[in-house]
Amino acid sequence: MKKTIERIIAFASRAATQTEIQMANVDFLQKHLYNNEKYQNPSKLNLHEFSAFSQNGEDGIIEEIFKRIGTTNQFFVEFGTESGVETNSTYLLYKGWKGVFIDGSRKNVEDIHNFFSGVISQSRLQVLCSFITAENIETLLDSADVPKELDFLSIDIDRNDYYVWNAIKAYRPRVVCIEYNAVFRPGCEFVVPYEATSMWDGSSHTGASLESLYKLGIQKGYKLVGCCFAGVNAFFVREDLVKNLFVPPFTPDNHYEPPRYFLASHRGGHPRKIIL
Image (cartoon, rainbow, N blue to C red; front, side, top):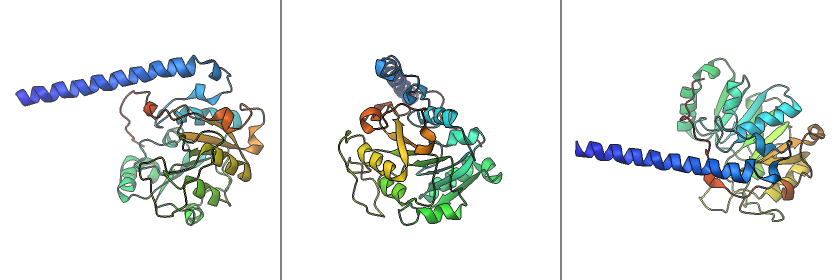
């Protein structure tokens, strides 16, 4: 009985601590984002952030981007999805989109098949098990019959993101979300050396700076329209769609957000559960 009581007290303590963290993060967001003069332009994407199944408010940014530019085929591709419970495109499935998840872990792919059995059986979601490299990405997209001008592409593989985006030549997604390394500030070019089979080692020696992704985006015909407030993901819109819908200048100096990783999943709420 004593051990049971101790476990209950320990659980309650952890829950209280988690609640305190969430409340502190909400206060931080209110002060430094929603009440901050920097973000009061209604065209600034950060004011629209929310998390349904994304980690850092990306769901809200994605929704707002497509409110402005419209959708076409409502088709997405996301790789580095893990189990699919916390992604940038799961919420799109709830909204009727279709697409492709790619992950290199067999366990993650098994979980996706369990969690998303309904939309898989409806042919709204394809799941590929593959470790992604710059050499195989277009072959994988071809094998899934991905539209050449899909609406949305999300890249999050924790190391070689820059090289994989650079390798995608035959496909022209309308919107690209890609992880950047916020340790490196605007004006600093950094891209980790390419090693096809390497994974993130837990250090800051990974990925690419926003400056380097911005310059790659220019080469590929995309403009940087924003970054999530937590300093994790950058959003690029194909330049023919930008018009006057977003906040210029479309540069790292204007849209960079520093690393605020403590805000991950800061919006709290119910534990995420997928039944699709």
